[in-house]
Image (tube, rainbow over all chains, first blue to last red; front, top):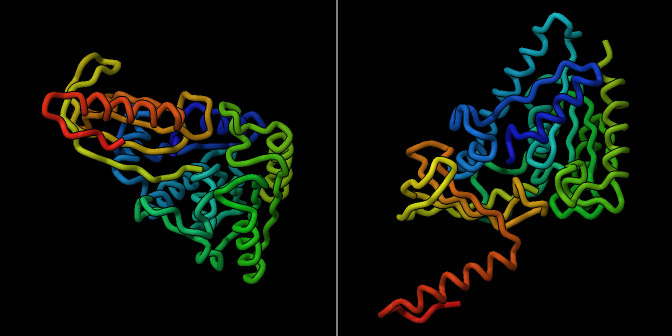
Length: 206
Length: 89
């Protein structure tokens, strides 16, 4: 739930540096307008998090904005990490996208532990509505999701005839893309980024 | 991962934040990704006054051992108060 923080903004700028139109919506602006990202995240956490319907609405608004830009070719995608991975998958099932990337999204298949807000539930039951090819990047040492849970998601998507491409990285756990934590794993992150550029290059080209 | 597991409670007291001292009304306790600590997960404590805005927050991120030691120190200190019940540590 880090929200609109420095790391997430850096990722957004990375896409811009690679020639993409990119936007990272501030999902917490309603509860904490103008607040620092960590204060905003703490406020929203205390209030129970962001409901899925609202998240989808905000993503849809961001996509409409991107499509409206003069340089846009009309193709759009989502990418998310951790809670954002689940949100990226959810958005791809609820909205019409051209591609989506799920980086170690937890609670896509399995429910969160007791104590989580009721608004956070599994979303794999929406897989039949997945609107686009899905790239999934996961760590073999991750506990949320575990490799078994990822395999379950693969089975669900296969049974529904969905196009997807999953990669599981040995020696990497959760948050292996995060350069600000000791969970960062350069080999997995570097190859993961190469997979992302290749995937988006194939599916978002004009 | 983002754990979402958050315990919220009402509290009474004062805290010192970026803007100085202010009255505390609420607290959140959760084990989740930190903002500043380099760990994957920490025991995070937010002491807040939501009525005054998101910036009225005193935040701490502790490794589990430190959090337990702090909890024990809190209970032990309270147990030494005159007339206090023995601490459940």
